[in-house]
Image (tube, rainbow, N blue to C red; front, side, top):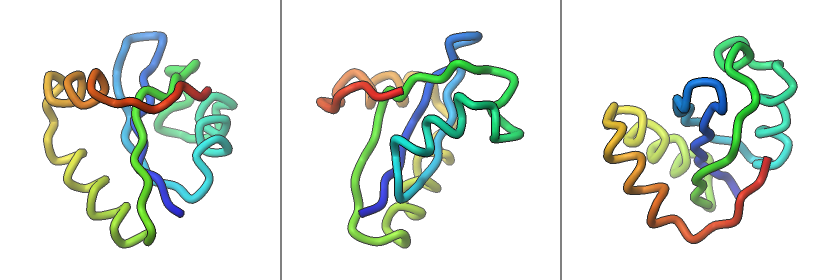
Length: 87
């Protein structure tokens, strides 16, 4: 399984969108400051995820979400998410 996820920074409430095979490990990676892009805005909280059977599907969805560039769209997506919080 592959995941597309949105994490939110506790520093400035910005969002980061990514995809991974191991969701818990990836959120920890961000919070450990190991990602150059997200390291300055730790801690991060998982606020949204979707599961896919293939990496190709996950990448397609990740690209779609990143292309939205619309905070209202992301907040609505997160608000309607029924997942549990990790991170």
